Structures are given as C-alpha cells and as structure tokens.
Length: 327
Image (tube, rainbow, N blue to C red; front, side):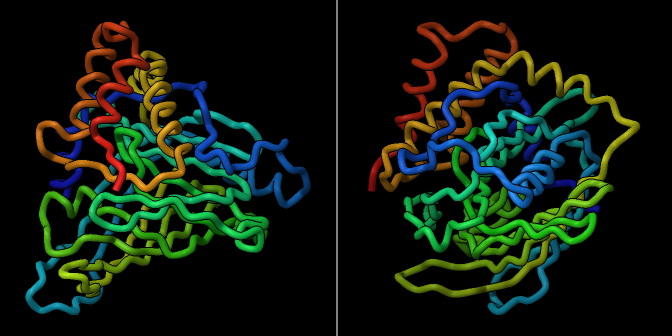
C-alpha cells in the first residue's frame, strides 16, 4: 500500500476546513435551468441514488497504470490508499444536489476534500482545456435531455472537471456514465510528474446497498509544441463502503464551525462561472497560489470562528480574483 501521496496531500491541506450544511448561490451559469424541479419516477430514482452517496465511509483509492506508450516517460507505480471520509449533503434543491467530502487524517484532523455538484439537464458545462484553463460550452437540448451533470471541485472549491450522462437503474444497482472529460493532473501525480499535462477519462459512479464506487478509465495526454500525445493509460477504482465503527465527530464539528467561510468561497466561484468567460488559474504550489491563499483564510477562520477583517466575502473576493485572469 502506497500512502505517500495521501499523507503529502494531507499535510499540505489539513488547514482546510469543511463547507456548510446550507449553501449560498447555486446558479453555476446564467443559462442553467431556473425552473422548478421536474417530477416523475425516473427523476426521483436518480435523486435517490445521488442523495444516498452522502454518509460515513471507509474508502479505498486504487490506481494502476496499465499501458505505457512512451518508453522515455516516467513509470507510475500502483497507488493504493485507504482512508475515512464523511460525505455531507450541502444542498438539495430538487434538480440540484451538492455533496462535500471531508477526509479524516491522523486521528481527528480534518481535510476539506473534493466536492461534487449534480444538476439535472444542465445546458452549460466548463471544459478543462489544459494549462489550468477552463472554457464554457453550451450543450444542445438533445445532449442534455434526461442527463445529470457532475461538477467536481478541488479542495479550495476551484474547478476540476465536469461531465454529463444518464443514470441507469437495474434492480438494486444504479450507475451513471460520463462523457469523456479533461482534468488537471491529480495531486498523486502532480507532485511526482511533469511529463504530461491532462488526465483524460470517463467516469462511472455506481451505487449499491453497500455504498458506492467511482470507476475511471483514464489516459495521460501530453500537450507540447502544438502537439497531442498519449503517453499512458490507467484504471482507477475508488470504493466507498459504509463505515460503522469509526467516529466522524471531528469532521462534523469542522463542518459546522466553518460553514459561513466556505459558503462565501462557493459564492465567489459561482460569480466567476456566471460570467460565461474562459478563465485561467495561476499556479498551484507556489507560495502565492490560490489554494494556499484560501487555505490560510480557512485556517484562521477555523481557529477564531470570526470573519476576517472587512468580512469573509470581501476577503474572498480580494484573494480569489487575483488568482484568475481572462485569456
């Protein structure tokens, strides 16, 4: 079992706290549906399985590089890690459901992990284009009919990737398959490799009575000198099994304490999405990177329980927007 990436990530991000149980704005773009949630048996089945992903879990992350096409490329060893996660319902508005993952580290330390938002028949998605750039794309009515988008956010609530697909229900098994999505390098790779630029993959989320799984079929894409080159393929299976013997009290406490701060962070990002402009995120691990700036504010809020001078919203705007620029 290789836990290096997991603990390296945890040490760098453990200052982050959780989001809140009630959220601010949810309109990712002005074109997103503002109508009342639809009804019907299929729609309610979809909602039920998405909501069932919230809960307390023992998690296993398992990634294996299966094919390598560039002999000169680095080799990724199998990466298998166990963890504990609390998945909290942030918001449920019928056709919009938001779930926040909270990672338990070293006993009672809590890391605000990734977030997933689900939206029914969303007609605008933001595609990752490589080099920390995201671009809005409008889907046709034929593409969106009956689908749910899943938008995945990083630990500072900045974007990661977004895909769309339909839920399929067979007996007590339900699954959702995405279209092909581009995303930045995962932290388990970003800290070790610089020989590719985009992780391209398809995602399957499957829900059963024992919990749920996230299956990935990925390839590693190099974007250099105007050329595209696939250097390797990998598979990933993340398994979430209901946990009955672990105390998640610390995660629940963090979630309640720092909710207003993370609500304002989400609101700031909603405002960025609503502009319908391409945007670029500056840097990642340098001292002025966005996640470090936001993490510092989250850490201070978690310690004091007080908003930064001038108010949380003002501080988030001042520190978030300098990390973004239009292309």
